Amino acid sequence: MNTDPIADLLTRIRNSSGANLSSCTIPYSKIKENILKILVEKSFVTKYEKVENKFPELVVQLEEGKTITLKRISKPGQRIYVKKDDLKRPLLSGLGVRIISTSKGLMTSEEAYKKDLGGEIICEVY
Image (cartoon, rainbow, N blue to C red; front, side, top):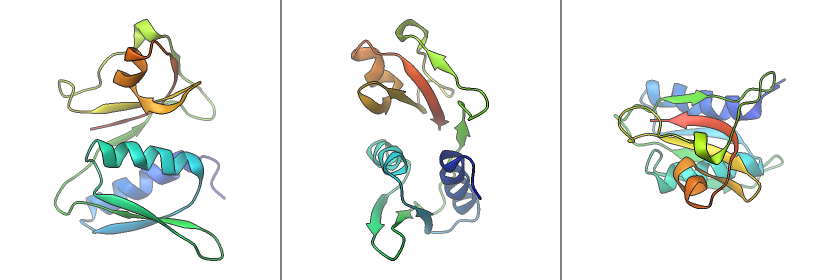
């Protein structure tokens, strides 16, 4: 049983990317779908779609030959929260993105900074 579904999502994408697979399948949840929306918007994954089976799934299309580094920051045992002033750009001179869970939903750290919001750091992607 998975105790951390977000870490499972990130691990499945990381493993599929490292194995040069073109797609991976992930069990569905709303937060996973919102994380994937941000990853598609920032061009880390090509696209995703929700497949309705007995148990809904998300099929994620990855860009072949492109490796993605996904790092879980806030974990179930240790939540990491930041204020608006503490938001900073992730590694690689701003080429990466931090996904923040705010009171207005999931968004990147840049969007949260512009909207003057803080929240829980979900993960870093670069």
